[in-house]
Structure formats: structure tokens, C-alpha cells
Image (cartoon, rainbow, N blue to C red):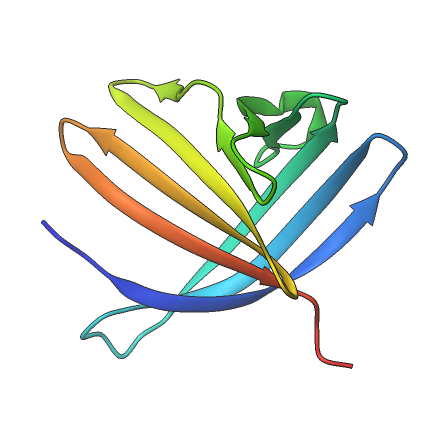
Length: 126
């Protein structure tokens, strides 16, 4: 079953010396549907000299799931060093710096998945 659509949301960042937490809330509208689906994610970005470790904190900071380390691929792009395995599925990502934020593109592959998710993180208009 193929699906596609668009969503939008807000991010509440929490910044510390060596990490940043994004609490995300929004809505996704599947293509061809009239009813939006609410979503919520919490990601923690641990900042290291040679990489950024990305964690999903869906169940809270004490139950954070390490997804992968993002390492430099170019001066404007980071890529997952190795895929995150979740059952039979693999998750990989590419982060690209943009003029007013960054784009995070996920690729999820597995026996029943071949998904591409593109998140655009932008500074709010002032």
C-alpha cells in the first residue's frame, strides 16, 4: 500500500550545552483524505565534536532510543553513519543545511516499507 501526503507543525526547542531537544506537534494530511492525523515526536540531538547522535524520546528521556550518529558527508550535509534497525526495517537519514534551517530526509526500508519522509525545519518568520 502506497501513501503520501503533507504535514506541518511546530517545534519547541530546549537547548543545553551539549544537546538540543525538539518537541514536535503537528498534523499530517494523507493525500486524497479530508481528515488530518495528529502527530507528536520528541527528538534529542546530542552534540559531539565528530558527530551528532540522534535519539527518539517518544517514551521520555529515560527511555530514549538511539537512532544513529550523523556524520559529515560534505560542508552542508550530514548522513547517518549506519542504519538504525527496528525489527526488519532500517532507518537512515540525511541532514542538509539550508538558508533558514535544515532538511532532514528519512529513508525507511523493510519487507513492507519503502518510505521517504522529508522534514523541513525552518526559523519562524520574524
